[in-house]
Each structure stands twice: as C-alpha cells, then as structure tokens.
Amino acid sequence: MNYINILSLTISAILSYIGSPMIFHMLTSSKTLSLNYKNEEIPICMGLLFIFVQIITVSMILLLTRTKTIYMIYYLFALTLIGLVGLLDDLIGDKNVKGFKGHIKSFFKGGLTTGGIRAGIVFVISLFVSIIISKNITDIIANTLIIALFTNFTNLFDLRPGRSIKVFILFSIIMLFTSNISEYNFLLYSFYGILIIYFPLDLKAKAMMGDVGSNVLGITLGVYCAFTHSLIWKFIYLFILIAVHILAEKVSFSKIIENNKVLKFIDDLWR
Image (tube, rainbow, N blue to C red; front, side, top):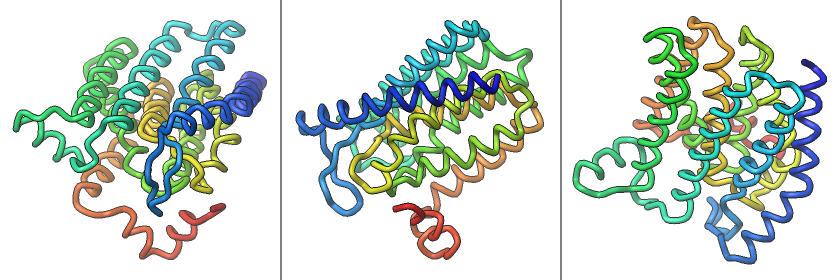
C-alpha cells in the first residue's frame, strides 16, 4: 500500500497546485473576505480546496484499489456535508455566539445559529457512519464521539495562522503509528499533498481555510480513527478530546500558548 500513499499524496499536490490559485482568485474577486487576527482582510473559505481535491483524489484511488468502496463513499458523503455546513458558518455565521454552551443556550431561547446547525449535523453524520461501521453498541458510542469531537477539535485551534493544520499534522502522524489497519492511510497522505501547497498560504496569513476547512480536517481525523484503531486507543483519544473540549469552555488556548515558551515556539514556527 505504500505506493498508494505516495500516489494519493502526489495526485493531491498536483490538483492543489492547479486549484489553489483558482479558488484564491475566485474568493478575492467575489469579495469573500474576512478580517484575520491582525484586522487584515484576506480570503476566507479556502477550505473549499480540501473538499474538491479530496473527493477527486479518493475517487481516483478507489478506482485503482477498490478498497472497501462503500466505506469511502460514506467518508466522502460525511466530508462534503460537514464542509458545506462549515461554509454556511463562514458566510452567515453569528460571530458573537461562541462555544458549544453559547449555541445550546441560543437554541433553547428560540434562536437558531449556524453553529447550532453544525453541531446537530455533526452528531447525525457521526452517528450515521458509526452505526454502519460498528460491531456493537460500545463501538457505536465510541465511534460517534470520536468522529463528532475530532470534527470540532481542529476548529477549536483555528484562531491563528497554521495552528489548526499543525494540530492536524501532529495527531495524524501519531495515528499512523497507533492504528491497527493501514489500508486507509491514503486518506491522510492525500491531505498531506493538499497541505504541501496550501499550508504556506495559511502560515503567512494570506488566506483562511475557515470552518469549511477545519471541519473537513477534523472529520478526516475522526473517521480515520474510527476505521483503523482498536477500542483501547479510541478511548485514549476520547479522553484527550473530552479534556480539551472541557478546557476550551473555561480558558483561552491562545493565552495558554502565548504564556508557554515551548508552545509559543511551535505556534510561531514557519510563519
């Protein structure tokens, strides 16, 4: 399968090299811009690139390998739907409502937010995929939580250039070593090909991938983990995910990173 990983990385890199400037120009010319943390207007929703390239690359690999085709169709369905929900959040989302608690409170007060829609769709997608791939109720619960929490996990860190992508790269590499099954590794390698081209844009704050991008990164980690890891490792990742989400409701990760020399060095790396 090593040649499949290399092939998926190569295809994604080529497609991203062609598609990235096209999407950048499309967003710029249509004034699909947003203020970054420096109050500079830059294109948002560049995560659209992730969806287009990942769909094409995974489809091409499936035609060559026929690797559990139905599983990959479920992945692409989940990827596309969660990406579109993220796009909705980017374009018309209420930035004044923050955090999981904020969206829940708004919902019970009769106010529907795009963040609330995203949370609902994430849960439905996670449950749908989990029921199909799981063997028992314990698997269903673990896989649902893994996919749902990983989808939001990368979004929690998407506050500074490159930070969310660095988190994705770190966890994806760890997962490659802790997984029991290697036939789905091409899903991650395909994203590495995309990031080879896109990552510099994000690091230099020339564009933002938006929620559409961070959602797609997260659900890829979640689905990959659900497909390839033992129940013990899933519970280890779940413990980390739950702890991070609880912490996110109480403290600012940006402040923690700014006050820690090691984390700040990693956060500033390559900018």
